[in-house]
Image (cartoon, rainbow, N blue to C red; front, side, top):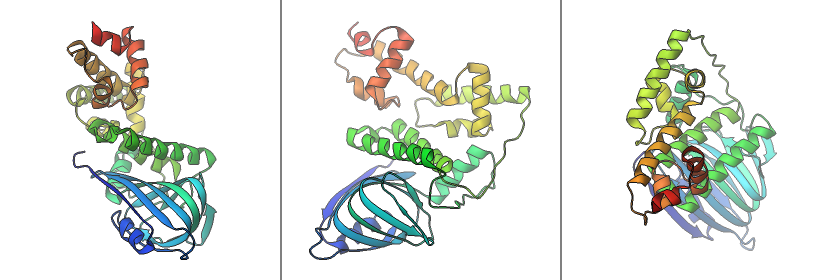
Amino acid sequence: MSELTRLRSSTSDPAEADALLAASGGRFAFASEPDAGFSFEVDQIVDPSFSVARYTIGGEWETSGEFEDFCIVSVTDGAYRWEIDGTRASATRAPFLIRPGHDFMCEAEGSDIVNVYLSPATLRDVARTTFGDEHLEVVFDSASTLGPSHSEYMLTAATVAAEYMDAGTFRHPLVRASLFHTLALAALKCFPLSTDPREKNVTPAGQLSRFRRGVRFIEDHASLPITVLDVAEAAGATMAQLDAAFRTHASTSARGYLQRVRLSAAHDEIAASDPATDLVELAARWGFPDVERFSRRYRSEYGEAPGSALLR
């Protein structure tokens, strides 16, 4: 994860809104009556692996078109109804998926929206590592989530992504890598796949071998923007197999182990740092975007708050 760009713009012209959505790989046509109070604001961050955009669209409006990438739409406020392949539904606090090659249309009024964009290639790579199938192709059966709990999970993931934009922690590579991993897995978990990947049995010796490869990879690369997907690939395991190996041999998940190693590195940096060190920046640099949560984990592990450790 390297190049990072940010787009902020606004307009009251539907044609200009079309052009702003084109920057997200979309081909759309907005329409609104002259007296309907249409306004369009976008704040979007683009990483080579994914993109997150927050839209505030005022007035009554409608649009239709398609995206080149998978687009997960989360409407946090306002009236919004969509139609894809003849299926119609309300999107308010019920995320839905726009798939490449599927025409989409909607009618809305006064909406706050968070869009998550994932390219087919990157989502395919995540799925192949997650399910341990190098030939797997990602095909979703529906635009709707699997159920209410999945909608809530996806909405939370998208909302957290938008909060990271506001907080400024998006600029840290470890934070972005973790967020991409979370959003990609959320998409695979929350929307129905046409494939039916199955786990293979692993011998105890094979599990131990994968655990050791995973540990070695984490300890060698913890300072880089790796995710547990990278660990699984290095260990030659699916996500489920990797977690099983770590829970058996380290009593935690692979993600928990990675965070433990990074917390230890942050602890070492705090011990060698000046008291004036910005704790928020230090935590984010080690992949902890929420400094309060970082402080709780640090205190639990080392018996004192990180701020106190800086003063010693």
